[in-house]
Image 1 (cartoon, rainbow, N blue to C red):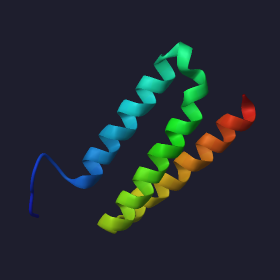
Image 2 (cartoon, helix red, strand yellow; image 1 turned 30 degrees about the horizontal axis):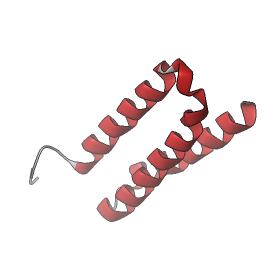
Image 3 (cartoon, rainbow, N blue to C red; image 1 turned 30 degrees about the vertical axis):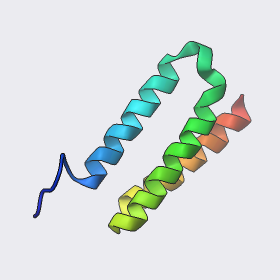
Image 4 (cartoon, one colour; image 1 turned 180 degrees about the horizontal axis):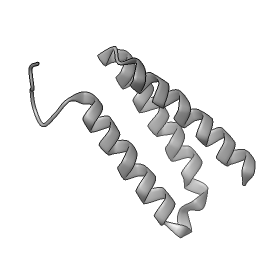
Length: 75
């Protein structure tokens, strides 16, 4: 296992996911921004998972799209 840089790609993507989710859900004034941020996050995870050939990250990206769709329909 080669460790280059600050960490593995999936570790950085999960840190990004947790950070963006925490920021959007704790910011009460930016409730309209949650769905677009989830779409951006899903796109980053989808592309990153395809580049790294990690199926779990691709699946997580698709799930972010689904969560954004459900959230947008409920609001």
